Amino acid sequence: MGLALAISGLAVSGRDSRTLLAVPDLEVAPGSCVAVKGPSGAGKSTFLFACAGLAGTASGSIVWGDTDILALGIQKRAAFRRSAIGLVFQDFLLFEELSALANAALPGAFAPAGAQKAMRLRAASVLERLGIAPLGARTVESFSGGERQRVAIARALASDPDVILADEPTASLDRKAADALVDDLVRLARTDGKTLVAVSHDSAVHERADRVIEIIDGQIASDTTYA
Image 1 (tube, helix red, strand yellow):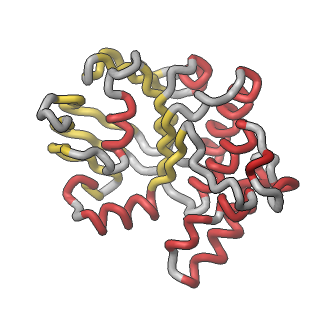
Image 2 (image 1 turned 45 degrees about the vertical axis):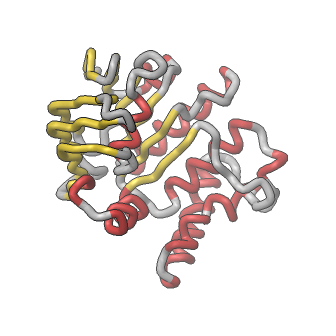
Image 3 (image 1 turned 90 degrees about the vertical axis):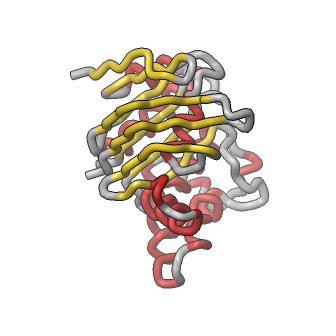
């Protein structure tokens, strides 16, 4: 059920060698839904990218399950990310000229031939669960923001990862679409036993999480778990 996260001695530096993020110790239980909040520039997205093994200069350890992602070489890190982590971005990062299903099934392009069909079927299944299946054949250029983000979530889940990392998933949406999107994202994560870590300024995300971590000036300022 999901993957546990254990961080120890994490330090992420910028190009000028200034420390952008310092997390001495942090553990997240598998299957948790965790929201990360804090002011702009505090290090929230740096934290999320570090958890994905995408931070530029990072030291310490970030262990997902039994795998220290920082100890892996570039190719093995990318392979782990493709199999275990689904990424959701605030700007969707979709191909406008492709259909919803084609966008959602894109991770299959990097999978072995035998796995491509299964990933396409899973992408179609997630689109259906998110209410987008009837639009699956249409190109996403005509989609609303909420519909686009649902396609992005289906793409993140196409490889059936244990972890979902979301960066400001509701930032481009109006209030009604944002609330519906948060409900769907958290429901999917909990139903499928995924570990969800979502960076967001949106209080709706914080209210639906099991735990809220606040980052200020590159350090964890508060950490609250809800029953």
